[in-house]
Amino acid sequence: MLPSTPENLSSLSHSLATVRYAVHAPMRRCLYNRWLPPPRAVTVKLLFDFFPIFAFFVTFKLFDDQHQGILAATGVVILATCIQVAITWFRQRKVENVHLVTLAIVVVLGGVTLLLNDEIFIKWKPTAVNWLFAIAMLASQFIGKRTLLERLLGGGVQLPGPVWTRLNLAWVVFFTAVGIINLYVVYNYDTDTWVNFKLFGILGLTIAFVIAQAFYMVRHATPGDDSGQESR
Image (cartoon, rainbow, N blue to C red; front, side, top):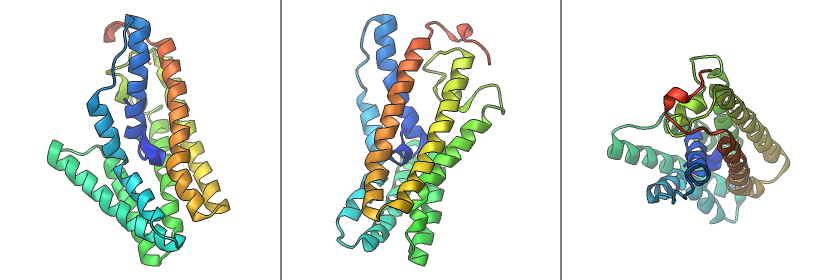
């Protein structure tokens, strides 16, 4: 099931949700010789997670003036993200940390964008989010007994410790690279191109990366209970 994030696919939980599902299906086929059909709940969750991104994209495309479009889209994405977090709280009585971090960045950078009438701040948002996730995953290499990726996926996928470390570092490199690529697009192309890249470009990069990781995880996955898992 695992991100996603459209931002990166907008947040680490999105990407991780896409990875978990991408790994489970082929893993079940390889290890247990059967397919695991995509749960409807996963599809609904991904659509819900991507709602602010699609709202941003659609709002921007409604305007002929790119500057006015990005300002309007910024206001919409702030509102959509707040609604997303509020719905999550009312339904589950808890909110994932990744959504709170994303909300804080959206409100701060989006608010500054609207206050100063300068779109550069909201354009930095994908880079800020990706680099924060890269820092968090890199820090988990040295803090605690398990990497952040293993903590998030270890309950559903069993891998040797060194494999978790390599996968976690791969996400660090990926998030860092996406942040750099975003800045390259920001400073070398117009706003319309950046908005398209923000949704389709980052989404495409994430899907390709997730698929590559899924195959790598299937290759190294080991059946059995937690006792058979290597310690780091």
